[in-house]
Length: 101
Length: 517
Image 1 (tube, rainbow over the protein chains, first blue to last red):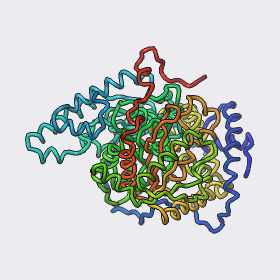
Image 2 (image 1 turned 45 degrees about the vertical axis):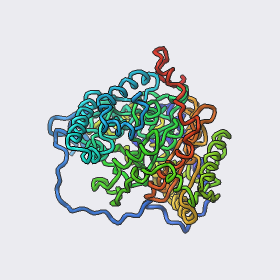
Image 3 (image 1 turned 180 degrees about the vertical axis):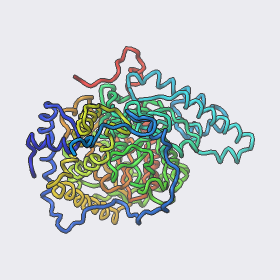
Image 4 (image 1 turned 30 degrees about the vertical axis):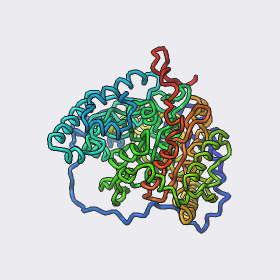
């Protein structure tokens, strides 16, 4: 199985939306490679004809009627927000202001 | 002392009027006040809400007493009984940190299904217990709020991730507690603290209102100081809930009622029972004293009439790798929700990606970061087939081992943990050694099966557990076997031994548990 380079670790951290200090990247590079070495045992098993597990206990499709039911009130939904204005969650702008158009 | 009673004994005394729920609560609050500074089993004790629940329970019992013996007998088993909840169970208006700094200050907007069940039964929720952050760990050292100590030896871990719940029950802070088990997080701490712990079949208990870790593996379960108490609490929280699509629409047997037989009958359950002993569970690195206790317990079951059959479970060794791919992969998806926008801690750095990364860098601890990296990698382009799909295929093989074994035997008996409680800090720098702590519980989780850990004695003064593993939905049989084992060993001296470090925990000069620098 593959080994992770420092650049790989930084790329995965970006995919995970995880900030890491330089020391953390160094430590994780060693630890993740050590852990992945343990996973190599799996490649010794022939699983070509084995279906992947989708669920561990048999359940039929679980469906419910498509009807509206009470949920959280707006006040409840906003109560834990780091930033809110009484109506919405406040987030940083993700689109620019259009001035380049 | 009131705290030494079992929950079912407390229930009897509440009914005969020799104790009140408020008195029970006071006794347990006093125990917490006396020893929890040194043990740190609790993240929050909510005295006001607990006192209201206890007073309401007393009123309900008084009303039933006026009505007559039938009304008293019809009261729910856990009415007025103190219960501890792992701090990932949502109770409306109370904290739920999941042991993470990223959820510091988070207040649950609604009740978990099991909380609705407990409140309907009149149980007294005392507070929230410590845990490894997002249930990722085997020692409770990965809590964002400091570690929990083992009441049997304060320099050692209580196991994890439900270490706070296990320690609280072992230390007589509550007779019963709720935990969760994803790869061993109830069974392993039960083993390390000398308590009874059961992880039921995946889908037996609703996870509505439980903070998620790995959704194909997570299951709610319970701790008690005997099998009957565990059965009472499991029976209270188990059952179908349409709000959790994975919860099974199956009737829940009367777990505790099935145990309500005299000792002779309990032992009769063992006669003619075929119990499989999987060779591969006596793993490399197992401590000889632990193996000796486990084998002695199996011999005890055999002497009482069970037939012991050695079985082969050839894919056992692959359980660890399989679990440590599948669980982190699912966690990487579940924990994407901690983005600093809707709830939780937030760091604002300017643009949205930087905000996410800074928020999660600050909010998550080292083990969570490690698992998110592992899981993200296992699902990333080019590696998904080699890791995640491969692991899910091996999962099918592991499940097949159990299916084959259960064609020959009624249940399996195996070790829970290869080792007794290890010293605080001993495995923190070696994630692979920490992961190996769950070698005997991971395959059971991967297959979604029920597992019960019961105490079977001490090795060098520290508790050892035996794991009973059953077919899907067969918790009642596991509880019956566990109860029969209690009857068989009722006279053994270790049964009455209390955790050795409780006196030291009560000494005001004993420091709070800390990790070695």
